[in-house]
Length: 450
Ligand code: PLP
Image 1: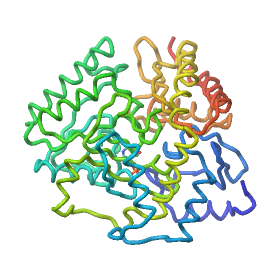
Image 2 (image 1 turned 120 degrees about the vertical axis):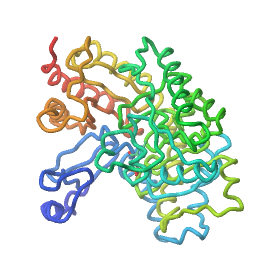
Image 3 (image 1 turned 45 degrees about the vertical axis):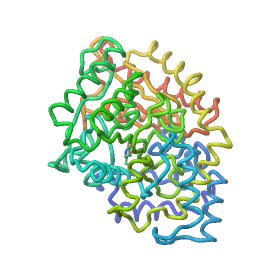
Image 4 (image 1 turned 90 degrees about the vertical axis):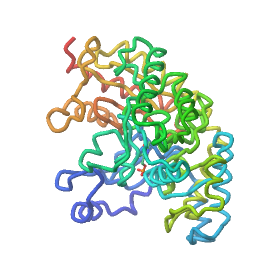
């Protein structure tokens, strides 16, 4: 990392004076000034090297500054930096073809956006126009983005300040075996009861009023909730029975994160629409989009789709996607993620579950996991209350600081640690990171009642 080139103190001064960061109050935030990054590490202005255990916001799947990806952007910049989305160009066309190749069978056409929230907005619009219906069913404990429609469709507390949100959103509970809303005793019961609840919700909302069920294939920011086997298939069947569009939001979990190209591939479920962003090009240049099936594609064959963005299918972003998908393939990163999950992460987390009174549950798939921290493993009282802030949240801050003390950059949400290292991480570095977490959990253990 070329620390020399950075002007950190100026960067900090300008930041403090001129930037309002996402989800933050500017008078309180003290951001870490990052001056460089390489592979699974990034470096701050004080020269500290951090092990990036969250791939930033679960997007830097191929690691930082991957030479092939950087070179692809540079080469595209030399050739064609930008062009209006009504033109065709090599980078955008190839990106769409590669995305269709790795997407589930039958999903062959791509609508490009600049990120995940816009992908969700457009998927909702497509579903409404395709069905002629208005209502969208979404889950509590979901996050779909921060634009008006996407935040209204989200089920997490970040939507509260934007309420009353948008008309036509109805919510249901998805499966969450550790804290079952259905009093289920096992995964099979959880699956059956969650599906029965969804069927009831559809019935009382009115099947003919529902355009789409919008669902994260594996719930991301709200807890890495892996659905029990059979759940997504059941959702697919309910959609088929009522002519409802199934939208799988794979913004966080698509492109290898869960050890398959798309998380739905674990269960061989084919949605009508998939929203993607982040991992499509590891976030090196903003890109997102919607992949659609033949039926929805046909709706817009003769009839113009009423939506578009100046930078849709941006050549630099799409060249990055072409290179990134090439890297996933050539470095076999999807298989690597699956193997690391099964052989390294799962056993390590299960050992932590045994050893630490603060660990209530561990769950995940591929390179996407969560540790849920509790005060008491019998009562399952969360380490901090739901949506905790200030003093209430102190134990989780303390735990995060313990991770940082050993050089690991953690992703802490509510009473959980999310683990989402870059998919390129090697086994030894992954084990080092897991050992840091194991050590830091001793700090959390002190808050346990037993
Ligand atoms: N959908 C899901 C499942 C996400 O996890 C996110 C972001 O974390 C979004 C949508 C929004 O994506 P973006 O922040 O790129 O707008």
